[in-house]
Image 1 (cartoon, one colour):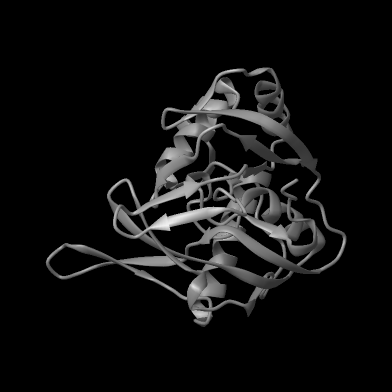
Image 2 (cartoon, rainbow, N blue to C red):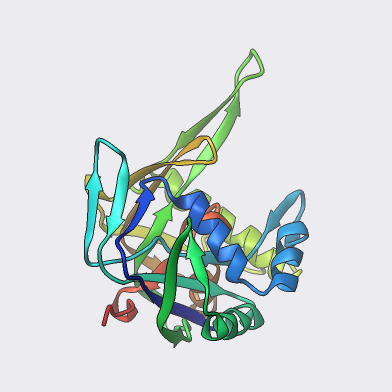
Length: 256
């Protein structure tokens, strides 16, 4: 169950809108193996009336960024790192091969090139894990008002419902992948924020919809098998749109 941490370099500064989520998703789908990406996009893994893609990717990580609040654009002045993980090893392996062989990569018209690529097994053997969210974790419920309009409420990591909905999401994804019900009774996953503050709150516009998510550090407790599954598929909702990727805090990618 591998992941990859991909470092890209570029000659001129890379300037993107602060709400670059959809741009990055489009780029990721271009570098994924097309047969598998099409199958995931059109079919995925089914659980009742829900579909799960079972892969996730990080926000762009870089030590040198500049945000212009007037233009609402972010400038990357150094290399950028993109992490991608999946419970399906072939997706990661084929993506890595594609990147190694590619000479003309572009994101929003900017030419970028592969600088380095690092594989990461993302497998744990303990039942407690400290993780860092490398893309925002988004947890929400949608309600319908009497007039038929729908409203969405986003929960913070300090709301008990946050943990409950993440656990329910995990169970559905796990059952979709294994095609069998989870055998345990009672709580199977706990999620505790251990270093989360107001600066970790992320509000982004994704294809016309405002989404709230949270970065920061969390302590997860569950069977090692379940924790490994979450590292490879993401935490909570919208993982294949660039939300909820987590990494063990001691295995974050370097920026050499």
